[in-house]
Length: 150
Image 1 (cartoon, rainbow, N blue to C red):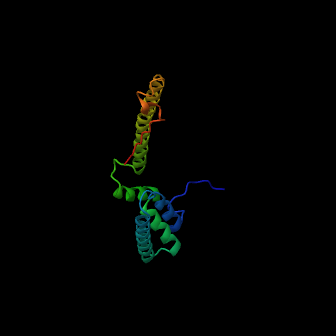
Image 2 (image 1 turned 180 degrees about the horizontal axis):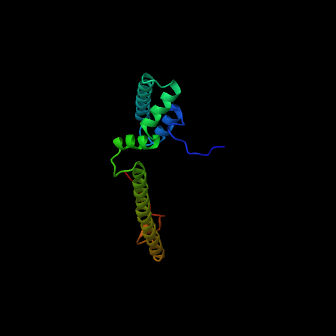
Image 3 (image 1 turned 90 degrees about the horizontal axis):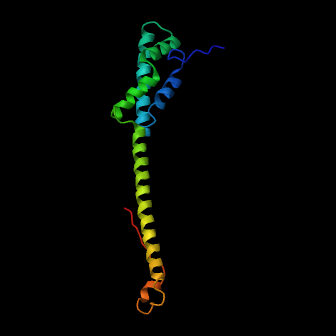
């Protein structure tokens, strides 16, 4: 069995377009479909030009695929049109994850400090046993804090 890597000349148009579309995974579905269709039309036009020059249908398709180039590189160059070169699509997810982590830590520390203050307040009020008549609100249960995050 021949284990040579797949080249544009050895793959069909559908496989070529699938590999190209895989590089566009970060783009919206309608943009992916539009780009795939545009490349398909270009490939058909190139194959038609090759047939006019005397190539057979299969060899014209292979030649058009070869001339169009590596589908992975073509797909990446199309994707770069939609994403700035210094911003990778995954970096948005990384930024969101980092922000979520920091907010979780911050609010965790904030809530933890509130619970500490609550426990300190309750333990301080327990030291006033016998003085309930002077401070009736001190022993009426827990103090609750509500945090609203927008």
